[in-house]
Image (cartoon, rainbow, N blue to C red; front, side):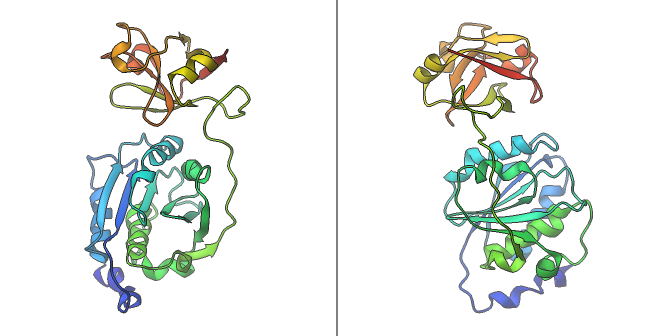
Length: 280
């Protein structure tokens, strides 16, 4: 394994090395060894890189939730950061792995809808399909059909952090167009949905509003399952006790919260709970 990790390092012998950041987003959780294995591979190839955990608590196979969580943080990272994003219901199948370079960042992900939030607002400078023919010498020697995070994503990101051009890992793809990911008004065609439920039980939706005034102006009622929510607040402490309320969160998305309690628990809501908006 050591030989396979280091066999591609000649490429960098004459290149200036710089400290970079690799950020990890997965549904692997924190109780198992999977994340540690990925970090071990990355550091074996580039000991100078900084590794940042975005989260490993994405609900299993929830690619849209992962896409939202990535979208909510990526813009706050330094330019040049590399993002490994692994929520992969089809690992080991014929699904593609893609690499995407924007003006300031590089993303590696399975070819599912995980990067749609990025595609919807970032200008794509380069997109490739990772191919075995091009990338094999940068992967680990033996590739498991169940753990591409360790054997494919981690080593490729580590080599990219040392200056390897993305184009060396595969063949060009035409950047895909995606539908809008957020709902701004009644005219939007995107379905309203729950994107995430945070640890406090706040329900984060894909309704995007600038401020409380816009919520009051545009929204009449939001339904979550059989529950109707119409009370609008500016901050969590304004909410009456045991009353679900609408609030604009830090990412300009409408959230449903309950003061000092879990809105998700009170409303019996999950990521699959249907949501509907009644407009003014």
